[in-house]
Amino acid sequence: MLETRRSILHRSAYGIGGIALATLLQEQGLLATAERAAAQHFDLKPKMPHGFGQAKAMISMFMQGGPSHMDLFDPKPELMKLDGKEFPGEVKYDDAAGASREVMGPQWKFKKHGQCGMDVSELLPHFSRIVDDVTLIRSMHTGVNNHGQSIYALLNGQATGGRPTLGSWLTYGLGSENQDLPAYVALTDPRGVPVLGVDNWSNGWLPSLFQGTVIRPKEPRIPNLDAPLSLKGDAQARYLNFVQRLNREHLEARPGEADLEARIQSFELAARMQTAAKEALDISQESAATKKLYGIDNPAAAEFGTRCLIARRLVERGVRCVSLFTGNQTWDHHSSILTSLPAACLYVDQGAAALVTDLKQRGLLDTTIVHWGGEMGRLPVIQNRAGAKDRKSVGRDHNTYGFSMWVAGGGFKAGHMHGETDEFGHHAVKDVVNHYDYHATLLHLFGLDSKKLSYKRNGVDQILVENPQARVVSEILA
Image (cartoon, rainbow, N blue to C red):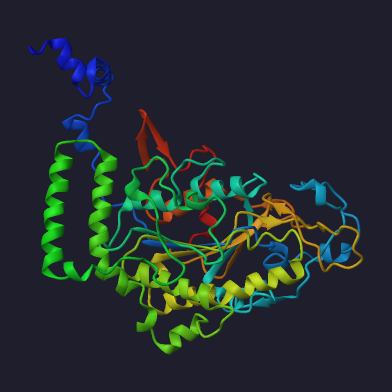
């Protein structure tokens, strides 16, 4: 049968609609041309920052749920005086159903520690030993009074999802010092994934190359690292070289396909990780003294201490950003705070303090930022008394209007307290640090200009720090 132009088009995988779409995309400049392909190449090779940056890596310990700042870091004598009485001002509740106006002062004793004289709760004995190495920020503020929104604000700069997290921005801007390990690693808790799941280490609309790589909380931390017996050695090397050649030919025929390029790079990284990742995650190489420092001999602290030690080993080997997450809402103490808060502190305190100590002993703290904190603090009034005469079951509601977190290393001051909340610990009132100020400050320490670190999306330059009032908090820089 004689082929006509119409029959050829009809049998085509594209047909007239596909040809019309291709023409339209080309007219609007949306097809990947050779010029655009060159401009859209992404990789994880080390990149120069915009200026001098003391920080080279970051370890973030995210305490999801909201640690009670007034019980841990921010003592309020006025609350002690008012304990059990009616709160004298306005309270911004999140959960009005379980709310009350009954003041609950700090439930644990505070004591000054270190040469800096920092007030620390008795619940954090290990943190109290490193206070001269940290900056304690007592005036954090996001103002979006629920977990998801405040987590987004602290991780991606806005109260909504779908955006790149801080770790993705850092790897996009700076690449990685080690091409055999992921540039951005997420260490999750065996008790459960954090609220918002993968959004906590999402690349958003940045190329998928910059998404965080999750390392499992239990062994094997990365499954399937060992090649099958039939492929070990030279056989695997030949096979991978052949596959790499096919992938590269496939990519060359499809210029400008950033997702395809990212997937190929991920496959190639996975092959290189077979040796590098096993070595980096093997803490059996560490001395008994180091393991004891992290509390690995203590069942109550061993799990988090192990992840802190792994985080140190990763940044020691050139990984740019490591994020540790606690389990789903383990710090969200709406009830039973008298037992739940001590348990949460016991789980993380030794490992977190050991991380700072160990980095300092190895000469890595000067170039590694360490962060500890959650997305909010708590309110100064009782929640969920529910008619009970005692306080065994009570807790505290959310508070994003003033809370505490600490940072160390990478250019932050040591032994420094910054900012204040009001006499009740409800609102940040002095030297307030908004989430966008915090991000601008972090980028600055890495040598990145928050206005220049951008990614063009749909013709618009997208940035992490969008608020025009954002500032570098120079008061907390060394």
